[in-house]
Length: 362
Length: 264
Image (cartoon, rainbow over all chains, first blue to last red; front, side, top):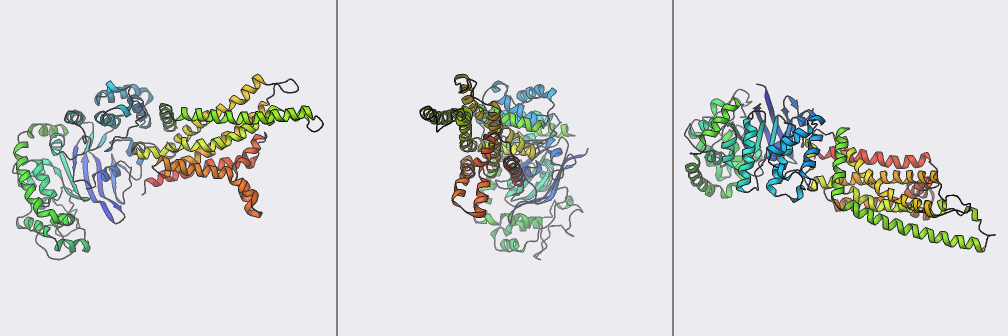
């Protein structure tokens, strides 16, 4: 199966600051990717680059083989995008809005009616189709935005925090809608969210981003293997481990590229977060076998090294964390306790649906 | 083309859902009424003077077209400068503020189609407002009779005058569209394009007190001077070039502004 989404060295600089730094990943058709990371990690920026809304500073992104930069229209034809704030016109009725979206998305005149009906039903907004969007609740607006994204049945769906700000019932509804879309197998979905159980429930793969750097990209099971050596643990624990810098995982496509930025190195030596790489160094990193020859670094193994320009993944994690070191230690303790608690509650409910999803994608 | 029409249609849909165009129609009708009453009073005084002193004023020159309808249309040009900014302000600024710009820019729509669709809707709705100015000659046609007992209105001249008004409205809309593409604040867009249009409308008066090259430049920049040609029933190349170059420049810069949006 050909790759539906290929991202290579994607970088976005805002002045000096890298919002996304040398991000690479690939998705096969039909895969569902959970896109995780703290606020400001660069998730939205990445999605905007994939949809052609923002140009990357460097690197390439291809959707269904078309370069986002070189053939933007071909790419845009294949993507349904729901930005964080649903892009709805408050002064239009739901139906008029969807008709407009269908027109600019190039839905054929003949199929228009059927396609709008399908989106109305799928997003469960048929009951409000004649109402002005401005008079609808937030949950409805979100679903209208979702209806817009699936118009024309695009092979790729990019959903930026589709459940944010919704009440529990609405969250369940939107989630089940996404689950339907995912299980149809017709869409490659990138889903950004802060709700980790959502990822466990809906996604086969996880991409974790922090301060523009990729911390991990693998299947949930694969992450478990690498970080916890197969021990059963919730995604919450994995996530906290990665974000808090207790471990780092080189992804399957080999992203051991080490940035050599002297300024950042200096910060690390001065920061208490230096204990993070040590912790990793002591045990042979399970990530190592996964790091392939694509890495320009001659020896990507996270063995202890003192040279300022030979840096390991763990170093990078501590780098990106360096700005938050003030609360660092106390946070480690707190998060460890938290993750234990979460583990106990979520272990039970995560098994079956995830497995089904994985089979569907195969 | 299809995208252009889809966008224009959406704009009109939204325009007529909001009270904005109705408010503008109302305000425009009131102003045009004032203009009409003003020029009719002047016409009345002239006619009375012509009756009293037939040796001074040739009453055959007193006709409704030249003395009532055309001055009215010329004054409507000012109304265009005052209303166009309120129609153009939301065109792109609102999309940015409401984050719907993201929808347009991630849909398979070329920036030029977006610009043309927006522009088309703006020009259409402004033309609709201007169509209200047809009320004046239509009423005069119905109720007024000229000295020779014929209809008082020379429709061909009136049509050319309206062509001029339409071109001025098109230029105003193109300028407004560009300003709207530069900001995400409708108020800022309205104020800036209002200033620009008032400047174009009044720059000729400044020219009267200037000298030499400056005067020539200012007078040639003046919109009412160029509109005057049409109002006199003349389609002059220089006037056409003047208005159409504003249209072309406005559309070109809007397109650049939207393209540039992606590079910041």
